[in-house]
Length: 355
Figure 1 (cartoon, rainbow, N blue to C red):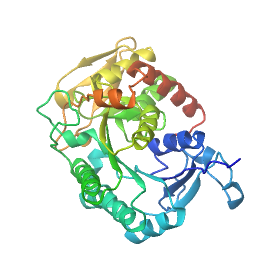
Figure 2 (cartoon, helix red, strand yellow):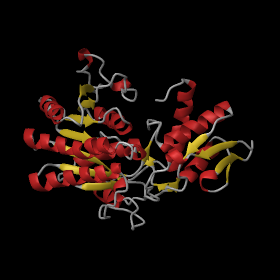
Figure 3 (cartoon, rainbow, N blue to C red):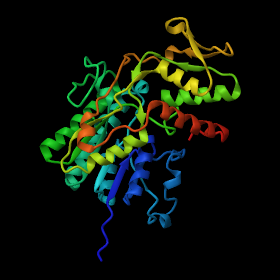
Figure 4 (tube, helix red, strand yellow):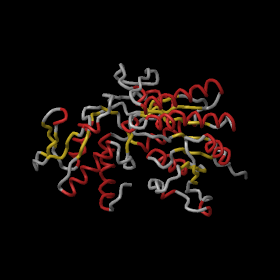
């Protein structure tokens, strides 16, 4: 009996929230999984340590991923890496992914987020055009859209260096698909959260801070624009969706979303209620504060440092195409997601850990 050849996947950005969930999922699908990791003096593999091969002896294990060092800023490194691992599928999740930070480091953001996909696709074209490629795109590309609900046909209007760079990556994938017949697809993902979210992202920051305030009975949560509305889903589900896109017979682009959104203010209130806070708001603009009605303590303040030069006020995605073609829809409500995040965060706080 002939054993079926295991597929090989290369995840670029494997140490992040999405990459870690995708790696777990692909291992369960019996893939050989390689993860590109940027070399650093400090370990940054906390999210994948439980599935990371620690030595060459573990690399043949069916439940471990294989670490490969590389950087999206280097065409040579990417070319050599793809030659070496010979992947069937490449998932590009690598990015400087913080929108606010992209205003401070625009050149670096464009290089990694915008030109990085070009380097990968050019390597695919050179080495093996049959490799399937998934570009992780972002709802930030829509900017302050004139359409209340955004779908695959909504025009882009990027409002930050990050969004502009993501738009470049999106169009690069489409161009290589159209001009060189490469299987290149885009997953246009709206905000997606989990306990593995980075601490500098607003949902993780809110959950972590309020859990710490609850435990220590003091502290302040500092935020920027409370009125920005986002479509928040569960990252674990979105990572599985990326795999589904590459299993189609033809490449295509899909919006991944919940079709529900809420404001940062409402998110704070929802987390607060789960922790037995009753938050009421007083003041306006930069002077606005959030007070726990029970204790009369201030627990939320505005810090203008967190304002973006050009904030996107509302993003709301229509994933009807994904539901129709891929038989997919979001399964986890925002309230369920908040409960998942709180439970994990409380455990991490007891262990004095971030992840």
